[in-house]
Amino acid sequence: MATVREGNKAVLLVVDVQVGVMSAAWDGPRIVQNIALAVERARAQGVPVIWVQQADEDLPHGSPAWEVVPELVPAAGEVRIDKQFNSSFEQTQLEPELAKLGASHLVLAGAATNWCIRATAYGALDRGYDLTLIKDAHTTETMELEAGVRIEAATMVDELNIAMTWVSYPGRTNRTATAEAVDFSPPKSLLSD
Image 1 (cartoon, rainbow, N blue to C red):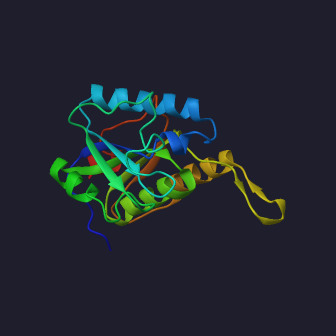
Image 2: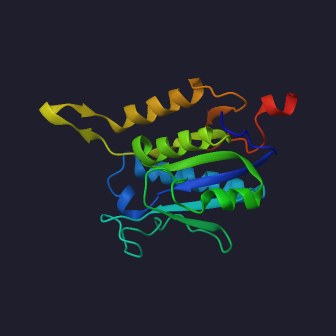
């Protein structure tokens, strides 16, 4: 069993909202607008915002495609994490940064739903964090499979939103919320214990 994180501090984790990722993402402008709202709300409540950026052959570090979309601007002093794998935890400085902040509750937004958001969400739960997925602030691209099979981006977003309301881990709480209604306070189950 994972070590359940002590404390009640939230962090907003914004994953891979990069030019090259968002250029073909489903409903990108609306999703970016919702992420901007979540960032604004987090900052207003004194909740730290951490920005994660993927670097790979399609997103070379420092290239225009690698940059965060121009509608979102990390503030001075906000942590930026570079990653090479789907999970924001694998071979990155994310966990040490979360430990410095005393984080126990991760609020998650970004792209791509079926890869990096899913891997980061399960990675957070596996490592003992409470998790809130902002259900209208993550996106992906429609997948074209063999024999003309398509998995629509909206379907993948819906599926992960459902999973994050039904999956359960001992001693942890997971939920979804809209960008407008996201609550950065500790999950209610922790407050009543």
